[in-house]
Amino acid sequence: MGEAVNSLLNLHGPKQEAGELQRISRLGAGLLLPHADNTIFGMPDEAGPKGDRVCCFDSRDWWQVNGWTVGAEVGLRYRIYKSIYLEATQKFAYGVLRGVPVYRGTADHSVWMSEQVFSTGFLF
Image 1 (tube, rainbow, N blue to C red):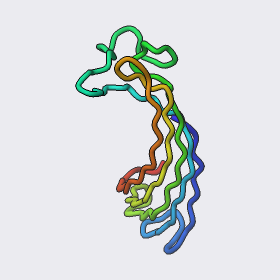
Image 2: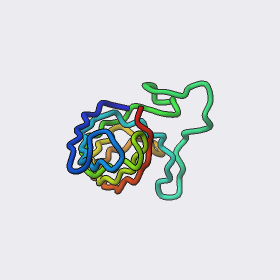
Image 3: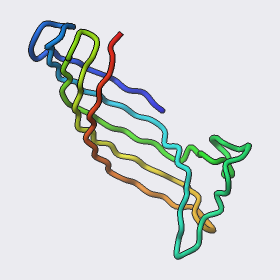
């Protein structure tokens, strides 16, 4: 959930044809909607089963808006055919969670994330 800005730069080959190699970069930001399923000192939280209250702003909802994230991603995209591509990227992000429900209270947390993303897709 959030907004992203994409940038493609042709590095080699004919544009929008098989054999094209592109650098891809993305910047994005969004909301974090955790479902806090945790145990603190052997005591589980009281999240309970998913019921009528699914999302998003009440402390009894299954998913809750409890934070935000920002990130950047850079990598390469190669067109196998005109409309089919392979992509390999490295993504870095930072997230902040506030007021996440835990046993008898709430918790705050911030995290740096890194992931390698390998994907294939279709262009229309």
